[in-house]
Image 1 (tube, helix red, strand yellow):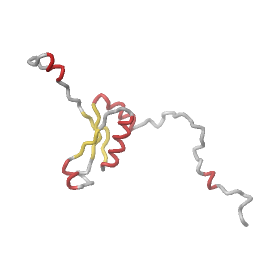
Image 2 (cartoon, rainbow, N blue to C red):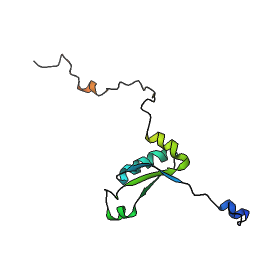
Image 3 (spheres, one colour):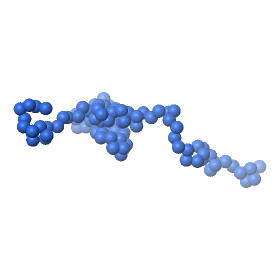
Image 4 (tube, one colour):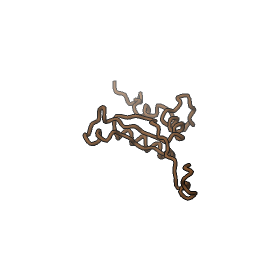
Length: 112
């Protein structure tokens, strides 16, 4: 806090968050999906891209889009975007290969 400011000015003084890149994409569409996923979980996230890339409509090189989150939200965002493959999920009771039932032939209906 600045000692030259009075108390009311100090209360209104905010510390700017440090933004960290949690994902990098090659286009705005993919970045928007990631931002939406994070925001749906209450994690503040924004897209950041080079302005010239958007102006020129570039999708290679300058078309890179970074997804940024505040420093304190980075661990949670990282876990959401990089899930542990060993995590056990709740079994919903459905077979993994449910689609095969539609394609299996009934032996009585097969023609010789």
